[in-house]
Length: 75
Image (cartoon, rainbow, N blue to C red; front, side, top):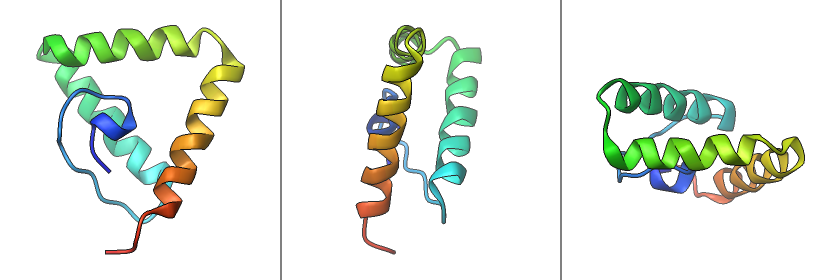
């Protein structure tokens, strides 16, 4: 999955065996971009923070991304 598919701002690709692993890779990438003050990623992070204000919406978003990951073909 790409950074953008996971709520981010770029085409950086992540590969992992489980959704939890890919979420962790995405989180690490987001932190790196935050530290670099990358404008596009800062905007994406802001949107995610707004989403996180509603636990229900965040859970729904997370489950939809998990389903999207699980529907991907194995490579």
